[in-house]
Amino acid sequence: MSGSQYHDASAEPNLTPMLDMVFQLVTFFMLVINFKSAQLDMNLKLPVVGSARPVDTKGQEDLLVLNINKQGHLTVYNTPKDIDGYIAGEAQSSLLAARQKNPKLQLGDELPTTVVIRADRATPFHLLNRVIQECQKNGFRNFSLKAMNKAEGET
Image (tube, rainbow, N blue to C red; front, side, top):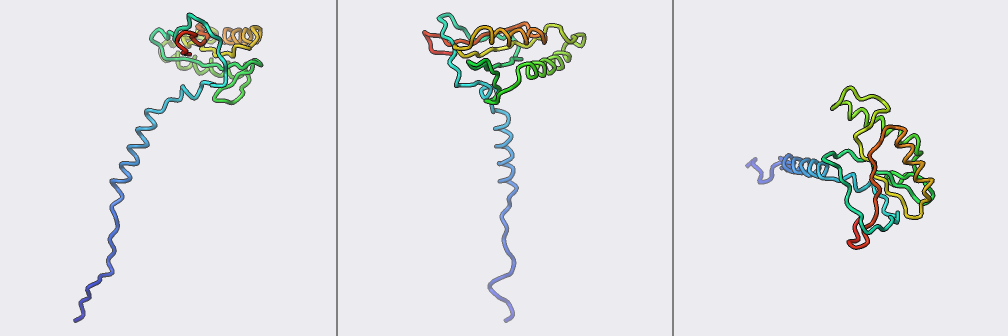
């Protein structure tokens, strides 16, 4: 008998369902990841104010978060940045985004972005004021200063 019980044919698993599941998981995590929380510098000790409230965005979602340490340096994603250059770049980005809704908007006009300043409680006012003036020079007019609520312990 020339027939054999064993064949040389090998069985390969079908990887298509597994690859499909991996692709769906990657897509899911890309959609739900929150990059805004990575902007916050948790090393800052915010000032404590009894009447601190959450930022009122008035229906808009465009926020620029600036973390200012006690030496007056700007950090973004835990990376030190040049204040003048970074704010000017963010103003250009905000202007381009705002022009999609209002094409007549020009450089120097009021930008719809709200600047959220998270300054350490030990930051001298003149250093904080420098950041605010640079923002105003680039068209930002809406500001929110973050503080910690003493009663609730919220930021």
